[in-house]
Image 1 (cartoon, one colour):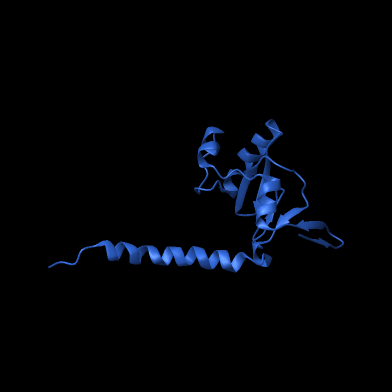
Image 2 (tube, rainbow, N blue to C red; image 1 turned 45 degrees about the vertical axis):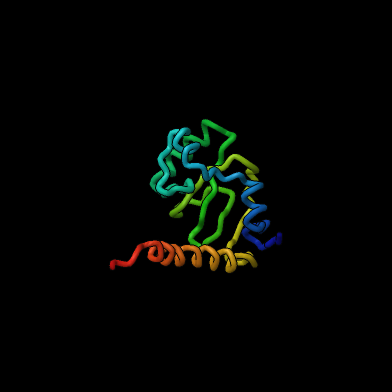
Amino acid sequence: MGAVANKEHVELILDSGAFHKAVSIIVDRDEILWLGFDPFSQIGMFQSSDTPSLQDFCNRNPEYHIVTYTSGHRYVNRFVPDQRVYMLATGDKNPYLVHNPWIDPMHYLIEEDVFSQLSCEPNQIRRRRKPKA
């Protein structure tokens, strides 16, 4: 955890686990479909064209709020206009909470692990095929 303060704003930077636990981003596609939305991704991300309906929903349901994935590749716990990706959340609404995956010391290990698994999958499929005799 760290903090940044300057003339424009103050931010509390959390690691991925702490941010997601505090903010409670909804990543269950079935729950989002049940709420009446159709996100463009499997993990509950919305495009900028969905912002009017997201804002209307959050105004009618104060237990929900919008989290923004900014063009600077950070998750911020507030609505930031003119961004490409938004998510719904049900947890802490503190607008100063931020997660920046690029400064997370585990980011590169997690990314490397994911890409290793993805690159191994085609090889595993190929090995399961029986050679033609």
